[in-house]
Each structure stands twice: as C-alpha cells, then as structure tokens.
Length: 372
Image (cartoon, rainbow, N blue to C red; front, side):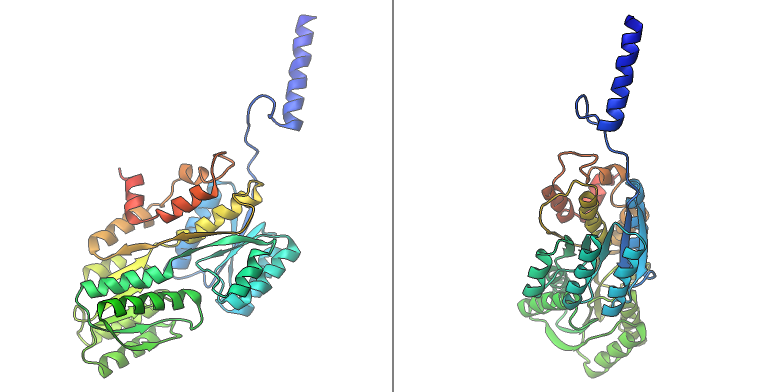
C-alpha cells in the first residue's frame, strides 16, 4: 500500500508540474519561444548593416529566437511596405531605423492593427507631436539611439586638439535626425574652439559624390585642414579619402567620420582618418532586448522607453586594433551576458539595468569585461 501511495503521489506531482508549472515548489524557466524578430534595414550590405545582422543573429540565437531581415532603402514607401511584409511573414516584433519622424505614425498604425510591437533603433523622434503620438501608441515599445549631438561635438573637439582651424562638412539626408544632430554637435564644437566652417554639402550617400564635394572644397579653400563626414555608411568616407589623396593632402587635411568600415585599422595606420566614431551596431541589439522582454511576457516597463548610448571613439591605430579584436572578431556581449539581460534568466533585471549597460558601452568597457 505504501509503495502504491508513493507511486500515485509521484504521478500527481508530475501532472501538476506539467500543467500548472512549478510555482508551488521551485521556480522553473519556461521553455524558450522561437520568436521571429523583424529587422528593417536601409541595406543588407555595407560594414554597419552586415555587422548589425551578424550580431543580431548571434544574440537571437542565444535566446532561441530568429531574425527576418528586410531591406527598406531608407525611404518612407520602402519602410511602410517593409514593415507590412515583416508582419505578413509572421514576425512577433519589428525593429527599424526610421528615415524621418513623419513616417513613424504610419508604421505604428500598421503595427497596432497587427498587434505587433515596434522598436526604433538609431533614432529618436524630434517632432514633439509625433513623439506624443508614439508614446500613446499601444505598439510602441521604445527606442535606442546614440547621443548624436555628442558624437559630432566629440569629433569636432578631436579636430581642435589636432590644431585644425578650417573645416567643411559632408553629410547625408537633410531632415534625418541623426545627420542633423551630428551637424549640431560639430558646429557647437567649432564655435567653442574657433574652427571656421567654410562649406557644407548635404544629401551625399555615394563615394563619387563625396569625392566630388571634397574636390570642390579643396580647390575652393586652400586653407582647408579638416573634412567631416556626417555618416551615410562607408562610401562617403571612401570618396573623401580618395579626393584628399589625389591632392597629396593626407596628414594636412584631417578627416573625421562615423560608422567604422572594414579598413579602419589600415586607415588609422595610414593617417587617412584622424578620429572616428562607430561600433554602434549594438544599438539594434539593445532595442531587441527591450522587445524580447516585452514579447516574452516580462516587459521591463509599462511605457515606451528610450535607451541612450554612445558609440566607440577611435583616435589611434592602437585603439582601432583593439576595437577589431574585442568588438569585431569577437562579440561585445557573451551568451551569458545576453541571457542576464532578460527577466527569463535574471528575474531581478530592470529597465534601469538595461539603460546602465547601454550607457557604459565603450571600448574600455568591452576590454575590461573580456580581457584574457
């Protein structure tokens, strides 16, 4: 009788644990869900886009999820159709770098109708009315972005430290918040340090157009000693370097830029670049962590949240080499570190913890955590 009683008690225990969970005796993790995360990018080629995709695939795989990539061309119609396509493919959440504030309400309405949360990467919303709309949307989980004013400001200060006095700016899309905020940062640094802004050229995303703009600056202003590339991927930078080389001005004209490329180490060794910001591919990752906790039923907040981080700054070949080793050849966050950013594996994890991790991201931070 005793054996039968123990047997049936064991059966009851197993059935209870199977159907009602482990709340009565011990905490047991839910089985991982294979969530599908939609990632809408301006392109799926180029140094920044490919690094975003590769790290996102690594991070989602750690958590048993998957990534579906859509190329939106960084234009409103492409972004609208892209989000619709990602939702149609069964994505549980979507991430996008909005090409303008104006496209945001339309994207959120699409997500609201589909009951799919949306997170914004690399961008903040500058328009107060659109920001209010987003904050009141049931679909908006939040955003992650760099302090882009600080990016331009810090790179502008780097030029002043190198003794530059006369600069020109080559920037990408007029009206883009990131491009505009970097411009504000550069001009603020110039005003404070006495650097003259001689000329500027906008809406440049191709190497050839950037080379032509740099050529015209060099020809028109013999005193030019700095060219600032606002962004737009590696092509504008490559074009500017080519123009400066053609005039035998490497070392005489300092170049700053954002978005690290595959030739970063060589560029720094050859003094083709004086200072650069990059390594911010983790921006998409932090947006993903916000969304993952949300769709996993353990949201980090009851309202949309903004995560602010700074990119990595490189001003020497040694720093570029360390970046290559610690952030490119290896991932800046390990599988264990990624799991600890979820309530699933770390029940005490909070939005403040995620914000602190993002704010402390730097080359020094990665090296301190992963130094052998």
